[in-house]
Image 1 (cartoon, rainbow, N blue to C red):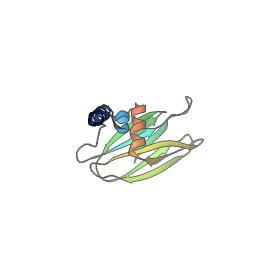
Image 2 (image 1 turned 120 degrees about the vertical axis):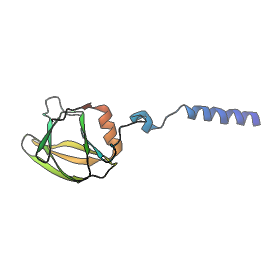
Image 3 (image 1 turned 180 degrees about the vertical axis):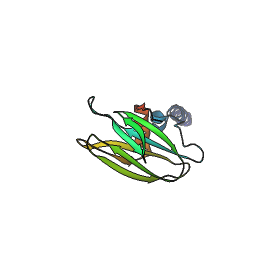
Image 4 (image 1 turned 90 degrees about the horizontal axis):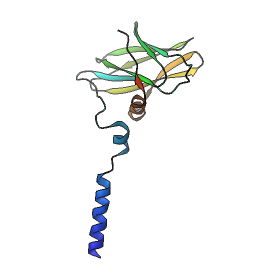
Amino acid sequence: MKKLLVVAALSMLTGCAGQQSPWVQAYGTNFPQANPGEAAVYLVRGPAPADAPPINITMGQQALGGLPGQSWMRLNLVPKLYDIRAYGTQANAELIITVDPGQTRFFEAVTVEPGSARLMEIGPGDGRRLVNQGQQAPILQ
């Protein structure tokens, strides 16, 4: 009986050792973190219809670029206040954020009604999932 228990316990341990957590399976072990002294801010967009126009993003007076469906961009920001806007074809929405060193934050660009877009903060799990599913969008310089 003791041998059976030992064999069962060892087989359970062996089975567990080969399994990875759902987080590791979905995101890997080395998702890029913030640069030292900066915050990593990811702007992401989930799936969108093929004919949907990109959601254009600005920060202050600087145009950052457009986010088509399933895309993302990463901003390395020093700690301070930022004014970020998402532009639809007819209206825009402003989001003011403050970042701290070492932070990694995710904001999703969404169409709220035809012609209007906005940014909303999402959790790191959803943010990492959208980054891993999408393509990096170029940032205008």
